[in-house]
Length: 151
Length: 419
Image (cartoon, rainbow over all chains, first blue to last red; front, top):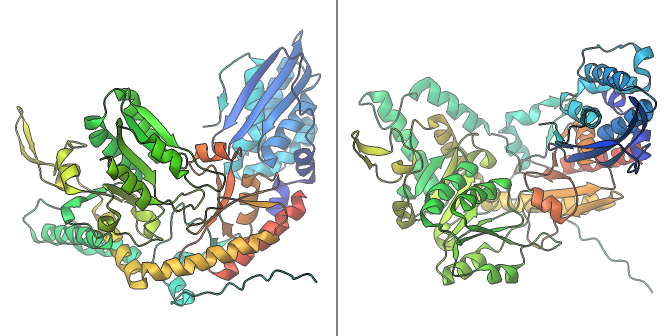
């Protein structure tokens, strides 16, 4: 496989695509939001259970490409236990990562597992796939009910 | 004793040498990710032969001047070239007169023109417009807009799971409130060739005019508007090896005469005062403003090119490619073709297990293969098949069997990664 392509479709991404984590409706969610990418038909629903400013639980449902599904899956596993502020900071960090603002060798410590999305910056048309879950999560966090659309 | 079914050998019956044709299309030499481009996104737009590319340059280098206006030499030359292209198109689709050929920006604008003029004049509250479930958004939204405005109803002919119009349902939809039937000749996302003659005959039996969206037909099927007896026919230049930003509306002269102008401006008038304006005669009545002159002349050149090769020969070659590809993809585990109509043009839409078309598109791109992935501006078709998107390979006169092999090899590689 081509190196650039391998960077985009890292094993972790392929794995999360195949067996997405937290892929369910959260019965006890306190807030949720829907996101839609009209370019590829990606459709995500993010559920949050927030108590005292802490994300107690998070899950997602929907369909999409490997990048969007893996991004949603990884996001949900990382956000559990984070405060609202920490989630917002990660959102900004992730956004900077996939849009190339952190360069090709970002600070792995802070990003943790999210660093697998470094390769996305080489594929401008796929940035929306990677960031859809995060934008939708932000809407859920701020109780914005309008559907996120990447257009 | 068991008898093993024999796979029929698919042979290329085309009358031309595809390698010679490929030399006319400079872009086919392009490298993508260090691989030679395999361009299989022809239903989105076709590539341009050198003669069309050169024509645009020739126009701007030697003829550029506004048409229908100046008394100077260049204006005469450009007007002549522009109107000659109109005659070429008239002949290509066998219209009765050149005043039935209206230049637009593309098939989309042509449909909007008819919706906003014919539709606006003829639709009243409770009237009906019939389209089909397999329409491109460009043959849905313009009608939806005018129907909303006029409180008219949009009626939709359903399709079956092969992606064919259910004709009996169409007959049931025809009513004394139907004002127009607007249907696609060939589906861009399924490849289906619709039984347009039957549709036209049934509509005409009730005195209802028919618009054919021939955007995906004109490059595959010989068109004779008099034989078809359609009332309107639209297509885009860029899908028939011509430039983008230019399209055609054909309309029967009596209908075009009865319709009000679409846009106001220069060229569409014969006399203007602040009190009133007298409109120009056809076709100029519908061509306000300076048109895409280079585009029209380029389209004329593309029509010449296609005519030289012969649309029947192109159709034969493409049928061979479609048959070969339909057969070849059977070897890809988990692949399902979407659009299995009996009669199809060279469009192959498919889904592959639960691998998203966008991932397929990105992988194939690294093999040099350009296909289209998504809903193809036919979201109702996707809804019918309960899928968000498909991958679509579409073949043109310059594609080869080897290119289809590269596509199929690419698909097999993808399965290994995602499997």
